[in-house]
Image (cartoon, rainbow, N blue to C red; front, side, top):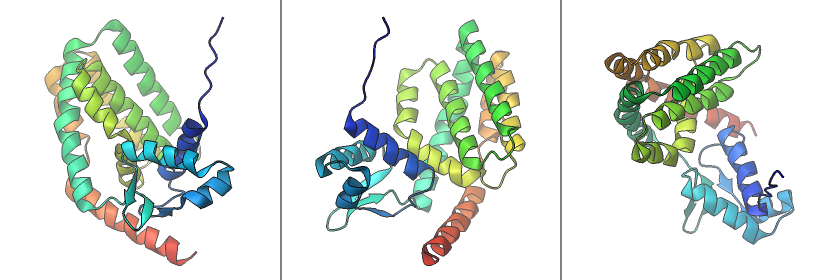
Length: 228
């Protein structure tokens, strides 16, 4: 008999709010009011508070004294940290994955890449959907490194990484985004660790470029806020 798993109200509320934040419905730095969210979702304030605490542990909301809850407001230093985290983890993970890849791992990686390419070719696909696919692909590569500590670190910042990807990928064409990962996947599947590590690093947008995109993103956010 299949086991039925019922998620708690707190988990459902956290899932709902997480989706709104990561989809950009709530802007970076936007205030989240417990009482208003409780009325909107028809839940108790304690349930909302527990959901927000979950998201705080994930690093996408913060609680500030005398201000309350806010969506994380990434600044250039945050981007700098995430950029260097990627440079530190992704090339090494790709190297390890190429060295240790099993037949099952190769199948999973190739299936994920095929799904990425299929999603990119879908008419009307947006950069946020592709950001999710890119995060899933990189997370899988880190998982296939078989280094649990690397994987745990990567998972701990996954949602912040997704916000980073949302900023980075908006200027690229969908098929360019997906296609740029094919050589990396091919190198890992071929067991070429040195090539995989080099391609993984080359695939990371330079910090100066992501910084310019971040400034444009902030300007667009200010214009949207002014137009409300």
